[in-house]
Image (cartoon, rainbow over all chains, first blue to last red; front, side, top):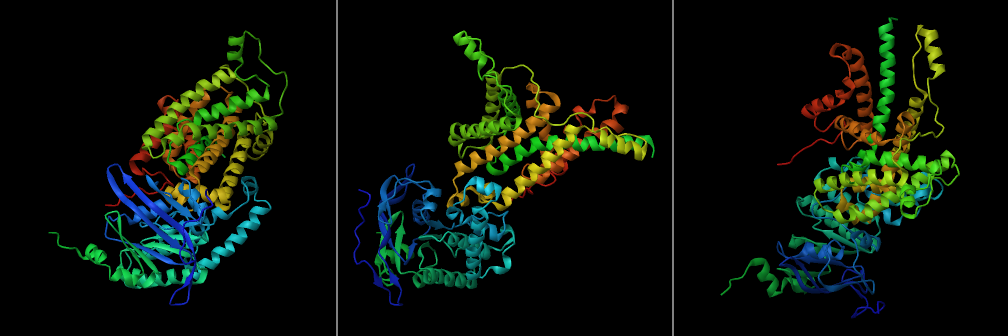
Length: 277
Length: 328
């Protein structure tokens, strides 16, 4: 039963800028999430394709973050199915979702403040370290070799995100913009099959936003990472993403390419407000 | 050198060594508090339980002998064998890991996201449960613990100091052994937490639960790990205290001595637990030596608590604790 793939219309296609978008990796089917009497997400379905940048947008309180939390296992929806890489996902703890290859960042930054930048990023590779407790405790054989291999990978990411000079700094001392970047680095260190970014540019100035946009595009381009992101800034979203889901009051009101979304009357109404008669 | 000064030096040395034993108990508290924010009231009882189990295994005692005999009318007491100390220590460590698993499975798992005070209450309950459980399992009589640690006056130090100063220092071999073991324990714990994958995961959980989950760390696994390590530290503390003063109920009360140590050193700092223990150890011995005679003695009973109280007034986060900053 579990090997049945969700329906996929054209298997892969080329984007205008020459990237290949693959088949569907993640599909949300009729997701409904309630907190007591409050319905945060109401019967929403959408999919994420391999290699694409997928945005979820919507006004405050639309349920965007809740949707991301459903994908990453922090919230369990009352109804609906989550399909990942062709199989229906059973109910999972967040750490199991992470082990499956879904990494995320948080809206309010969740880093380990007491640890150095390097150590923070190294935690991103925990799911990939295979040596056992005893080997680790005695620092014997596999453990040491493994640590060095992972360290090399992490250094690559550090170079990629241009944070070499803060490698040893405790994260708690960094300014906001850099913290966001370290969080991205930690998520990347897991070599995720799906990267979830919760408002990667919230609270940043124009320059920092440009940097972050560049990094997101580079990550997608260089590693072919599939990215799903939530963002408030409409301009940024339209420039970055291949496809956009628009949510309002927990419902999906639009789904399509940035151009389609720009001309969608329901979206325009939700963002600009509309006179009710 | 004047006799008083020499005697004072001896007091300081002995204080330092007593302090090491306080540090050992405090260390167990810090480990659990850092990783899960729980103040584990049962840490002292864990030391007692570990020591009881160790003696029981070593002597080949039949666990729950009293209970079994009462129900079945048998006369079981001993298996009749004697387990070597090192093997008994390993077996006891395994028992403590099992204990950690049980604590996670039947207590912590059901109290996730509860306020700290609820978790604290749970550990009080756990402490009383274990006290009784230990009694039923191994009997309530006072036991002698002997794992082959050297005991009695260190004659080498006594003679050397006598030749130098004309006054021999009295240093107990057991205290020296305890100091060496404590140093080894702290060094290996530090290395483990700094350089191993599990250590990194442990620090991550101590820092931020949500972020730890998002990078694929299972909180349950870490809790079992941390309680196992705390159980092992309790075992070491139990061995040292047990060898010093016998394995008996009062062993569980050493937990109370760890409280002022923690207030001094800070609840979240391993070096703090060490330094705090040493300060309390030296402080109370020196105070008793200098001021004790003026106020009629027995100051060791209260000195540590008064010192801790002063610290609470002037530096509530302790010497090494994280600063308490409330953002407005």
